[in-house]
Image: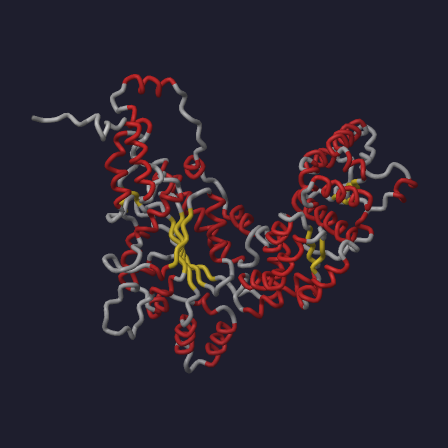
Amino acid sequence: MNKDIRNDKFPPRLPEELQKELEKAFKQIGINNPFFSKAAAEGGNNNEAKEKKQDSPPPKKDSPIKDILNFNKTPREVKEYLDRFVIRQDEAKKVLSVALCDHYNHIRLADQGKSQSNYAKQNVILLGPTGVGKTYLVRSMADLIGVPFVKADATKFSETGYVGADVEELVRNLIRQANGDVSLAQYGIIYIDEIDKIASASNSHGGRDVSGRGVQTNLLKLMEETEVPTRAPNDIAAHFMMMMEGSGGKPQPSTINTRHILFIVSGAFEGLEKIISKRLRESTIGFSSARSSSEDYLSGNIFQHATTRDFIDFGFEPEFIGRLPVRVVCNPLNEEDLYQILKSSEGSIIRQYEQSFGAYQIEVFFHDEALRQIARLAAQEQTGARGLMTICERVLREYKFELPSTSIKRFVVTAETILHPTEQLQILLKEGEQERFKVSSAVVHQFAERFTQSYGIPIQFTDRAAILLTEKAEAAGISLREYCTQTFKDYQFGLKLILNNNTHPSTEPFILDIDAVENPDQYLSTQVLENYRLDGSQKSPSPHPKNQKERKENTPASENPPDEGC
């Protein structure tokens, strides 16, 4: 006789309880979005659920794919964007700008049904030493277009079937960067660094070259056009997801085509210069004038004279290097280049340190001589722009540790600070706030400079305005730079109206006094209105003092400006 024990020790589980336990189990093995979705729990054939779903309006989403398919930038516009982040490398930026525009123009034409049948994709190979901006160039390009971007090191890959990463995982990483959107990932950029490390050595010992020639063979198929499974064969979690996709949510394609994925590879290529030099010298034997020309070649960046034959002799397969038709050479950075990176680049490490200290409400101001000293020491590191972080961290590490626990809220980094950081820190701790106004004035002056550089509208603050801004920033508990940015966030629009009205000389700065600090919005509105009232008589709009007495009292801080800094 069968005994019913369903309600004794093991009562039946509710579907919701089972779903929660399964979700928890799948999260433990790395599945963040289990296939038991809310829609699936309601039942695939539940008409009530379907009607409820139809009643709710579809969510509005931005469409990055639409922007990609409507690409209309010119190479000059792309280069101007790259100029904001990467110093020097002008020729490299020109070549990359043209290649990028050609690639995404082809995608746009292909979407319109106007694609060339035998279009050759312009994959890129970048040559240059470490720290010259190769990765930064590619990442900035991806940010400009708005496409997913994946960076990987070529040394981690091996031929399919051997221990090591499979090159197809690059494409699947691109899908992850696109939040699972295969239609967006197919237009992304894959950047592979250290590509010179997978060159096959000509004197290779007898074993199988699983990380050289085999990887090149697998990569060349990706770079041309192939279908890649969106889920790896050994990814159990992904296959569970695929099996249950039909129960809820929009199923993703099982493969992704690499036709429109742009591949960019790079490397330092140590040893390639010897191959090029040997070829150039051999080609000029017996011809004195030609030999002189060859010596001129060798005095510059020799990578500019690299040919396909040189890459083959270096260890690349002809088919592989043939799929990288665009060759870009990045030049080494000298001391002046490193200084300009600190001074002018929007990605300058100096701004990172300003933000780091600003998190503790500490203002830091770098003198020009300090920037030059940092560049000088970084050049000795011979690691390009990466040396800038090395020097800054070595010099300012103790400042980051000590100052947040003191009452000091601002300090200046001078050349002496860079050369003798420990001694200068002790002096700063003793002096405390003695240089309070000097640093505050320098920070306000720097904000005015950056405002002028960003918007083309010259402004200056009076000494009284600089002091008041400092006091208000301290009362608000935020950094002086942040307070200035918030206070004058709309000034470029109002001052631009005044300039467009041709009643204020474009080269003459607008002088901002304490009334602009006390009531910034009211002050700006008043100046714009007065400007348009005076338009008929073509008088100056009066952001300047109204009489000689007030002009003398409100001497601009810039008449005795601090040393320029960044």
